[in-house]
Image (cartoon, rainbow, N blue to C red; front, side, top):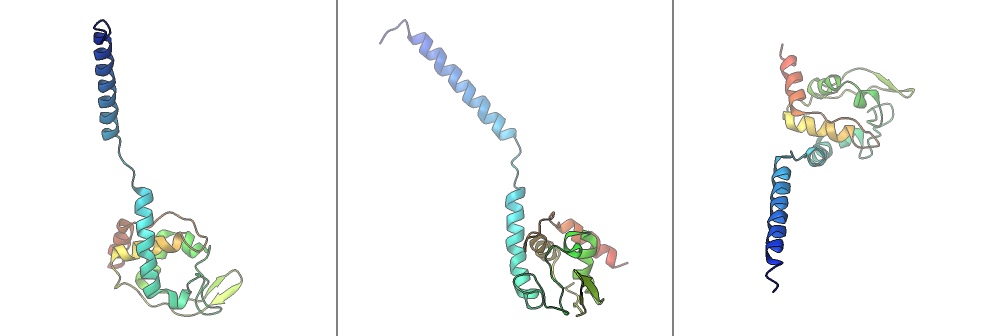
Length: 151
């Protein structure tokens, strides 16, 4: 080994080690975003709730039943006001509704027995399925609407 090059190699190794440590520290301080993972988990959990409580009326494709149960595909009810949508789950729905020129008149029972997380998940699933693309519903939003319902 050439002893004249040893100090240079040691210096290089020290600089390389310092650079790796600085990079590791920087990565540790950078917050990890789990929003995509959280959204996927919410959608998956929501699909289970949908299959158990919603599919018989709104159908597996979200198209509903003509003149009875409205579609969940790209409607203002699904993609619009989150509070209104949460209230439909909590209170049920007993109004004739016209969507794309067709009237739907079947009563939807209240699903207020569902936990806040289940409501957030199923609505997030519906708002991100059947060709829909809308922001998730959070458990905090459901809690707030449920608390407002008790007044």
